[in-house]
Image 1 (cartoon, protein in one colour):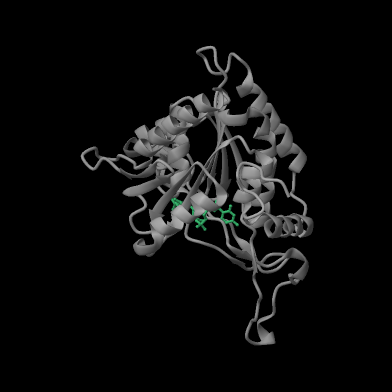
Image 2 (cartoon, rainbow, N blue to C red):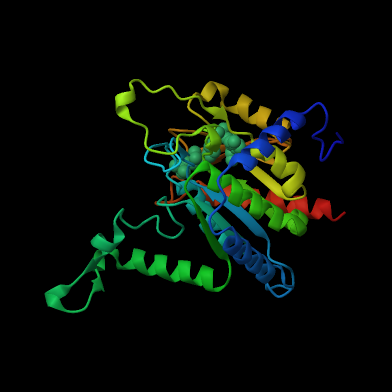
Length: 329
Ligand code: PMT
């Protein structure tokens, strides 16, 4: 097998390729894939026109993945394995990317945190609105600024074709949609970016070995064999969109192994940077690991309500600009 972008015979390629073929081959068909495909191509077309960037250039497009994938245990799913991810990282990063002029494809887990809604209460419909003295519905004054901002900024981003939201729930939908996005962004070359903040399941039950109906509790202790989900980073980097700028994430709970694992992922998948974060401090600081060295990025604690994603996205954008420049020389 030939070497593409440095991932060659010595890399994980042959085994991973078989695993990936078998994963997609046995997955249930993605619902509405044609509609998703059309929406994607329309969004990319709108943002690839010479007018899109405003200053005469094309607009850069980033795919931000967000939230956790579920692993169904039954085909007619009643039970599933889930993970902790709230989607805050992806939602906050999306806001900063849009603000900086990027068009964002937000691939998110249904029900997780959404861009521009981070300061709203958990149940905004019930908590932000009221009917004073039986008159028309109105926003409670205590929430009016947050609601105005959420509605105005989200609607502006969608109206200006800067935000396309695509939902997923389970690992099959996530990876199938990511594949559609990856191949659709291929022609953008280095102007496209992947920012893979979703917490992707490492183990799953293959569709064809999953029971169709609800698992019966009377059958006694449950014994399920989970297969390894192939790392799609490899195929994204080598096949789907090999020239795109690619940022992956590494989450650990043990700080002693975090940077070592992030460095290993950087070398193995030849991504452009790995954002390393620890579960308990992930909203305060991250370390951007790349071949240029490690950079600690911290939230500005002197600014109330500041996010670590603010300086993080500025750093990632600078790196992306340098990559685009380098690719054109
Ligand atoms: O959502 P929040 O609550 O705000 O939390 C944010 C976060 C902690 C989830 C986020 O910052 C983060 O670290 N996301 C990645 C978590 C993770 O799944 O790490 P991992 O070590 O399992 O995977 C590393 C990378 O490989 C990820 O970029 C993932 O997209 C990719 N991957 C994972 C599994 C798989 N089968 N294929 C992949 O390509």
